[in-house]
Image (cartoon, rainbow over all chains, first blue to last red):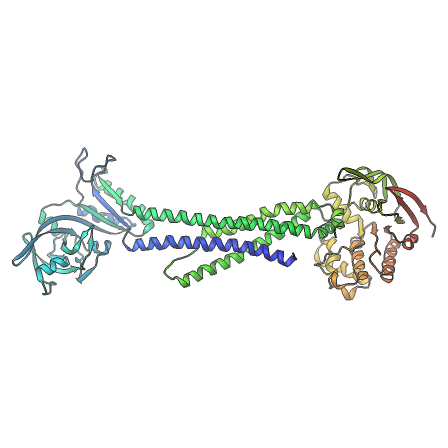
Length: 388
Length: 226
């Protein structure tokens, strides 16, 4: 096996190892980012606040446990905007009332909230717009109705701008929900949404059923949750009589699974580096045996064992580093190619993987060259020179 | 210069012990021209290796240039080898990947001498041996005689006190061999102690002191006045 072949083999082994680490971890990371991004677009930076504290006994939030929980108020909800992790808030109340227009009327669920609710829940409208912005506590005579209700009340005639009656008050229709829309788990087709101020007036009730909060992004979720708890406890005179829940347990699990997957995949790729290391050791042993005469000669002209060891060591390190760098370049090219073919897949090798990959490569080169280098330095010069 | 006392060298070959050298005493003064001859297996090469610090005696003592070098540590041995001894081999043993110049620079590289000085000395030496045209050629581009001359240049670039040659003309034709011997003798004229191990009686006869070895011992040791 010639000198060039041996050198090439060692470099290639390292390059493949490092390249594999980069490409594989990029795939794992890409999968993770893809899933998180998809979930994020569904509005999963969601925090929900319930009045009352759940005991571990499994009581439903909102039930009395020992002491009367304070009401959640609109002011509470707006105070939460103070946190820099919070993007939007929407206070919520639900009741049911009679919706009527002319002769037609029926009992409908009524949702009271603010303009931000549609953004938080990604709701889509087929006509018009959602509730207008404005002072959340003030009643406004506008409403948004579900598609089925529109059909029932207006038939083929336009609904926007028309007046309907909810309970004993009149509201102008400013928007119609798209068919089969979803809000808090039930169908919007038969839902009426009113400004929360109006709902409070309608049902004569100041307390909120829920507060919906959207955090700025995935990483802001936990800090936002902590801020929300803190603010509310402070507003409730030190009582922690609210329950704050992040609605992304599933996403957290996914994230954890995929991160673990990426590490596992990186680990598998690292095994290939260990294999590369063993290859290097073997190639170097061959090298030592083929260069026996040369080593004997070097010793004969005065090279010490340490110098011989250093020679082989330095060669191995240099080749490892060169191989690792080539592997890095090839790996990144591979990742770029994946990005070209699947643009929607955000593959990118995480920095920790690149560092670990290159570091392991160089360390492998060092460790697996120790034995051959030592063997080279121990050669007896007389016997080494006698070899043909 | 060289003083060997009660030197034994025993090799373990399988189950048996082979006495390559047995109870050998030898004194060589500075500047002497010695030839060592004898049949195969008589221990001539082993003796040369011990003198050249490539090998250690199993027992006995070796003093080189007034210093006891019998049991030096690996590093020290390498240093003395580098500074005091020049070895010329039958099969040249040049590094195939290096040019003639590179080969001659090698001992200086190991000694830590800086590049310009290395280059200068190597250049000088190769020119003196008539190889100025061939300095940048690799060994496989040189003839046998040229290779041996490069080897001698390498052996002498550190100006050693002792020059050891193990069958230096064994692989060369008559003309090339003649050139090599002339160079070696000229070096000895300049003050080096020259010890030549050879099968060739003509070469052996040129030395002023002829040692004959048989079975690991010195059978005869004749000084001849030139």
